[in-house]
Amino acid sequence: MKFTNQQIVDTMKRIGVVPLFTHDNAEEAQRVVEAAYKGGVRVFEFTNRKKNSYDVFVHLLKQRSNYPELMIGIGTVMDGATTKKFIDAGADFIISPIVKLEMAEVCRAHGKLWMPGCATLTEIVTAKENGAEVIKVFPGSVLGPGFISSIMPVVPDLQLMITGGVEPNEKNLSAWFKAGAMCVGMGSQLFTKEILAEKNWKQLENNVQEILGIVKRLRGETL
Picture (spheres, rainbow, N blue to C red):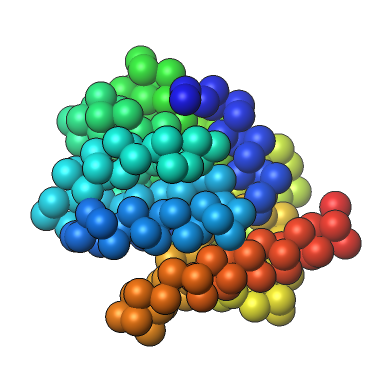
């Protein structure tokens, strides 16, 4: 199924959490994606951090019948050529830890969401002016919720995804959403070493469900 950019943005906003994950074993990556999907995730970022990430990503896309409502994109993309490669493979969106305008051009040409990583207001405004509908604030653990609450009045229509150091607990999540985050990205804090080592997919599903429940409650209180 093909998703529009607006559908992806709306789903990110509605769910509030975008998991990010990488693995060099295609079957295990698939089990992780399926557990997250069963837990309620509908937008998933697979990150391009392994030598065979492209092959694993293609495998995940071939299994889409197992998670028909899932919007799956690629993260840790650093240049235009890699952007084009993953778009051609079928990525629903492109996420990067940096602002590189050649990536914006490729995404624009193919009608795909480009979500660049920014750490300053100048980078954020530059990204927005070059077509970024959703901007990844990275690293969140360094910048902190205070950074978000400070910049929102300056550029009030920002749609920000906080990534890097987001913790799966009510206190941390509350701080980000109260500051103005549209959603958060969550990686190793969600896909723990213990869960992966034990292949405890049911526990992962339960954890995802619990975190999405926390976010839903928080956003119900703050919106």
